[in-house]
Image (cartoon, rainbow, N blue to C red; front, side, top):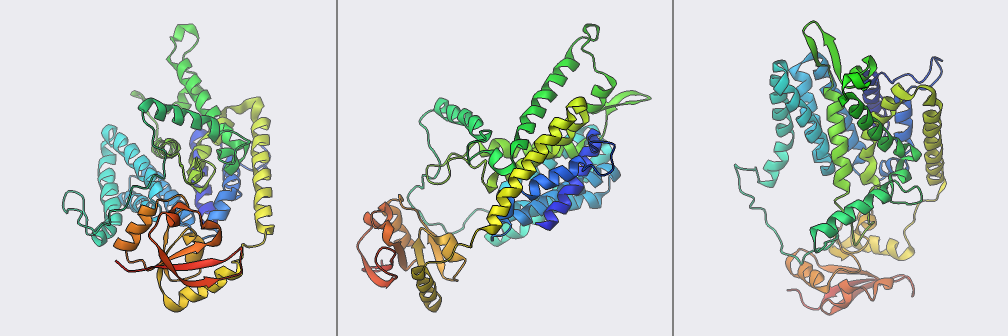
Length: 435
């Protein structure tokens, strides 16, 4: 958690310096925009919660931020060691959390575009790719699968289709559902929105995007119409004067962060669940939105002028509301196992059996027994297939789940153990006959 915040401050500072939006006032005691970005991320309830549980976000974001920082160093020095570090960290970020493939996509595309226009970057781009591949190669070799070179011969078990995500009959219906997500992700009343994770600062991203589009439109207008680029607009568009005319100014870092942020933004729109939380914007999966916030805040600060106090109020309100949520989280009691679950865990630890359960995530943190997840509305066919084709010996059934499909539609099972009192009992079941 702490390492994430330190690396994010370094990254946000470098982004802000490029936009000319680091300082928010002349007073030395005023927090700069990088401090605000770190504060917003640091008190994001989802990040705080994820880094206090055995999730991968803390380590994954450390790898992601380190990759961008190494890329920024390559941008300044053209050193191949920096390129190699960036590629390696991008590969490790992917291995830590597959969602973070967006970091590799952002860095690769930004580097490829730079290499096309700048010969001095081509060796670095090749080294970046080699380092990224080497980082993930041990995992691929462990799996026994290397794309193109080796066929995927991993043993697989054919189970009934898991309809975890919405499946719509037509492409039009699919697009309509994606369009509805825009209303969810910025709904301040919804627990599923980015506002839930970051506060009202989430609105600064679409505001900055709209302002940037308007600026680009003005820049495309004929010079005689008063729509030409001003000196400030030219600088913000990534242009710098030189003896030979205009040529691109350094923008590798901001391009990589922007591509990665946009990838994360749209990739979450693809998933609408019928089983879990319908949309994941307000959950830990939406935390990469911080990359777009890290771009939007300094970009707006550099152009705010007399509206700077309004941006400061938005930042302060976001930090305040998120901090209150974190304080409430710290003050809440830990979720204790029920007496029945405590007895169950002791039983599992004594026998080291394998079992299907709807509470695999919590129970799995308490025992070394092999637990396989299912859910209440899973078909009985899936339960039968898991028991027949996988190394599973038992089914854990909470009393409240007696009418769930995964057990009602399954083959008859016998009771191996019972824990707890009526109303809160837990049953451990076994097949009548192992297949």
